[in-house]
Picture (cartoon, helix red, strand yellow):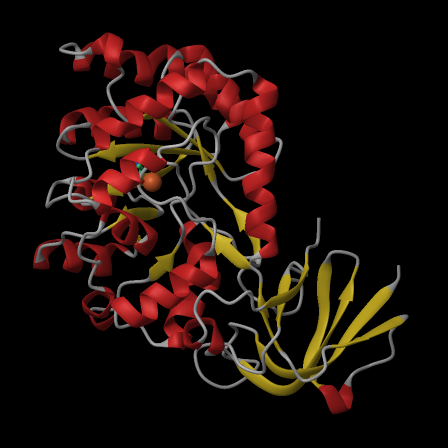
Length: 385
Ligand code: NIG
Ligand code: FE
């Protein structure tokens, strides 16, 4: 099998503290060797073994490919007018989700697929090599099923979000909708999904309804993740901890008890600063979570309503500038943190046996991701599949 050595790496982020300094396991003047889709050697450039091909990184910084653990990519339409209205003073209402549901239902598979492909292309060009995709803009048995079937063409990390919002036709009958989601809809979606998620929020699903859907998903063999405490305080985080979820996402409005529960349970807090940017709301307090020992991930929440960005570098810049994360913490959260949120050990890290998914920055240090916001700093992306 042919091997490729990437040499002349000015600074390598491995995210493996046994390989280098600090929590990012940083190695200056590094090299790594890739065989097929895996990393087979990591170390100082001076000791790199022979390989069939050599590629020179030219002194630039190399890091694990970004892991975007939260994205809603199966949709049609655009809500730029809603965004403009918000910037003129309107507030965000999750009810806007229904606009996208209508557009999605009336779109052909080919249109939906082309839109996913466009967004996945954007993500890759910005360094994302592993990404999750949720359903949640279909909200009928067939539309959720086809959303997940289309998503599965692009990623293994597919999430059933039938409980995104109560669809129009179930207005006033939310318990009937929950019964459908936890019953026939889950059954139809199960073969295409790895995860189940619920938007547990005032105006969407309450604690009992969320628990019913998540427990049914878990009983069907799906991993659990929860949209929790985004728009206000609520039961989502506690529910995620109670059910042993992989991740509680958003975590914008937390009590001390919520922070303690996250720290004690090991549930990852996935922060999505693109949503606060785009809804002009206060950012989650990452510092408070980190200081309490909570594992933090960063993701885009890419969706046409509350966060229409596919850019992890943008989220890193926001996390550093607005959420008091250090550049190293933000880079870790967008790589190893995202991998933890997806319970993956083969990505978000560059060590022996990990996937050869990596980003070559156009700069010598990862701090530039926050220091030079909005600048396309991803020079190259290696993807193992
Ligand atoms: O994660 N919170 C719920 N779902 C999305 C918003 C979706 C939308 O507005 O279309 C989110 O922010
Ligand atoms: Fe979301």
